[in-house]
Image 1 (tube, rainbow, N blue to C red):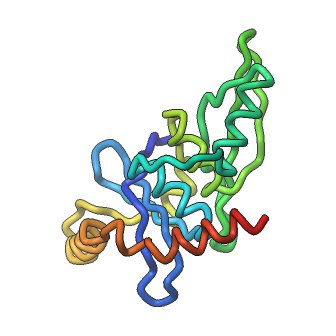
Image 2 (image 1 turned 30 degrees about the vertical axis):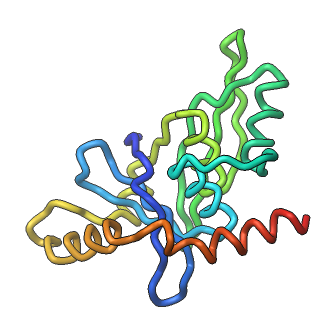
Image 3 (image 1 turned 180 degrees about the vertical axis):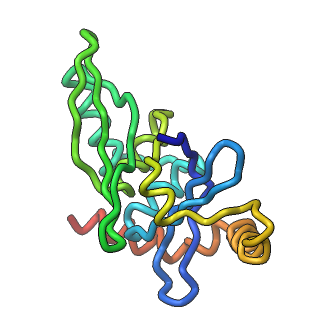
Length: 171
């Protein structure tokens, strides 16, 4: 398992779909995962330290977990099949007992970044979906990818966040 961090949220220029981008500690690999707009909005809120007056869905999940005596220990993105990623959230109680919760990676990431839990990705997932950001062979692709990520502005997501807010308030 390789520990990764959230690099940011990008938008697929072809489809307009949000992508969460993870990177390893050495900044040698990046893993893009296409996600839903609600999860992207949640991740952006945490990255930008934006507060809301009432708990959003991921905050609510954390509150429920903590009220039952557990904490979020770590998140693992542990499988990919036909471009669908799978994740597990590991909960730990005060006695050191673990509970594993099946999750979509987007939800697991949104929860993990709120409590500073580590995000791990297994080798199979990395080999099938990651982009090298430092090899000479992939230098041009890596530079284009880095430029794409670095040029994303929070304002690029204003419509995405408004749509997500509307969706959350409708439910």
